[in-house]
Image 1 (cartoon, rainbow, N blue to C red):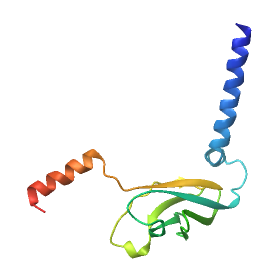
Image 2: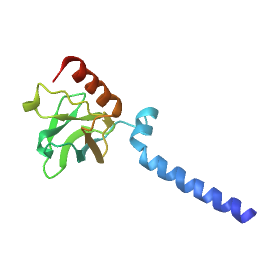
Image 3: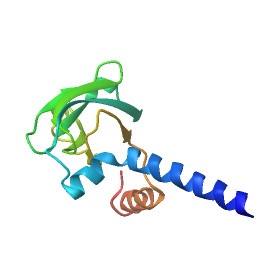
Length: 133
């Protein structure tokens, strides 16, 4: 029984260490440990839309600085922990794409998901039935 408790304690310690590593920007920001460091965030695009990767940009929320994607990767200079979000390029000015805001880190992935949820699809079908195509 003593060995089992040691194994559980060891696994718990490794899990805690991994979670701290994974969420370090959030923890650092929440606890205000030191000044935010300038970093170059390497942002990978997980593109689930029928658009090209070059149709998306990464925007830093605080400064509105943007970076374009090339081969599925964009690099943007930010302060660690600042928010960035995925948006469409200016040529799609009339179209709104609601990217999820995330805190910047040295290596991160943003997902572009253009699929419609069942609820939204039901709403669109209802509108089409009521108002026609």
